[in-house]
Length: 169
Image (cartoon, rainbow, N blue to C red; front, side, top):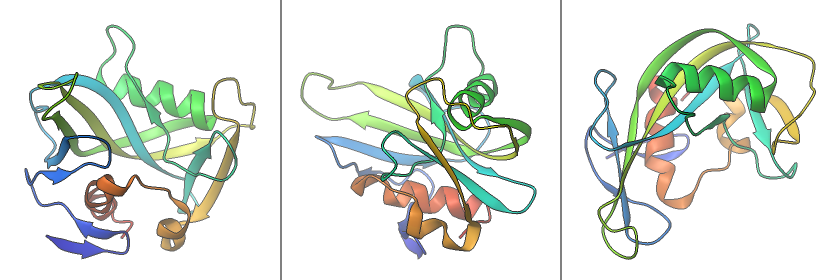
């Protein structure tokens, strides 16, 4: 496992412990999604000025836009809808970076496998008019992303890998 400005970075298919319960996460290259239940899309959203868009429900914990699919949506459809809803931004182009696959080893969800698509999206910001759970938006310089983006403890290797694939780390 190598490192980036975020911390340790996941290698292809390397399972790393997740922060909650007995979950393991792994990075998968773009292409066919790995087996599991589609669990949504997240993206590093980059403006024309090279800044990265972050969103927050409380104004203190900043995350990358994303969310779960609606029935019949493709990975990219989910990405575009979630970025519009959460960040009030239009995706002008998107590049699939890979997939994060989470597998539950024990407990009531034992055997559950969730797959999330991870993207780099070029975006055009629209006027800020929050309508859903996200109440705050900010843009940060790409070189300062690691200082602002909150990551779950166990997911740091996945975020690190995604940032490297997005050419942000």
